[in-house]
Length: 396
Image (cartoon, rainbow, N blue to C red; front, side, top):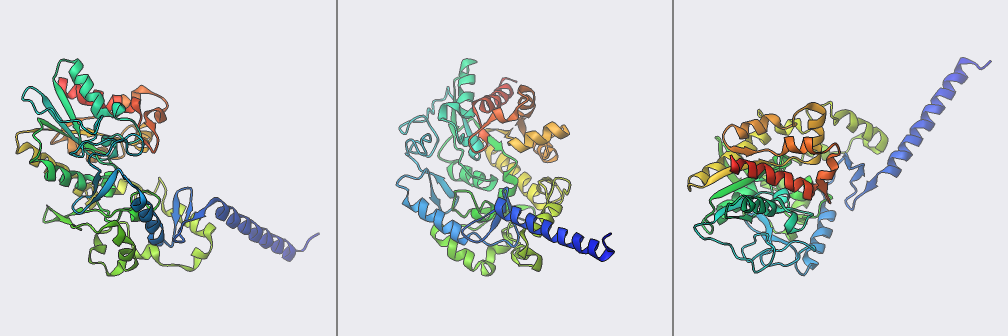
């Protein structure tokens, strides 16, 4: 018979071996980036390090491109490369920076034409699909088939947030005279609205740009970070980030998250601690935080939408918002019976015409993934449902 001390010793040895095995598995499953950040299953573990080297590499790659489809802009951060043909194999812009079927496409500004300008991010632009499969083009076809002489102008830009979208409208509104403006409401932009340096929010994404944002001052929108730092300035800016005056407005930089703790030497312990703190049952750290109308992100998003609406309607132009849910928003809806941003969407709906393809998307298929393609943007099927929801609003 083994003595109690031997049993305890074997138990301790077993725990040590199990811990070592767990630590090894986590390290094998994860990977480091050029700045020493450790990721496992797209989860970044603390302590965080600013993506200085990662961004420098991406800037170098960007500067080496002969014809990038996005170019630096001091007010907007970036914008489409006007006149570019076949960018990234499928993106073409006319001389006004509007996505089009050909680089020499010209707007039809005739009085008999119903001119519809659509603004927003990549879900409006139609990332990952050819122009003919974008919902703006499909909407134009539907309206023409119904007997309406309509033309849709696609001012969407990949990676934009709501602030950039509003600023783009403000910079172009005197150059064009649409009859309708449609704003794409993609809920992920509620996060982007409170970000200044895109690589800090998306360290693995490919856009090495800074951007403007709005802050609320006595309920009014105040733009900051204009002029926007050029891409080549970002590595140096991040090296001295704690001294940057606008650092306090970068929501996704929390100094405490960059401070090393003793337990961070174990990737397994750090991973477990992060799972406990950030999970779908802890609403403080899920997207529910950003969609809470009592907090800055949702308040800012709502104020931007209403400011957009006001500046459009003062020109006697129609205004509409279209809901553009992502894959995980639809998955949440399927599990819980409503969108995770339903309260915010209802607030938008209370003051603006809203086209919502969400119900049709939920009913159209059991496999939500068929609505998406590429990097998570709408497929032809998904874009058809968006266009149909907007078309129905026009027909009503």
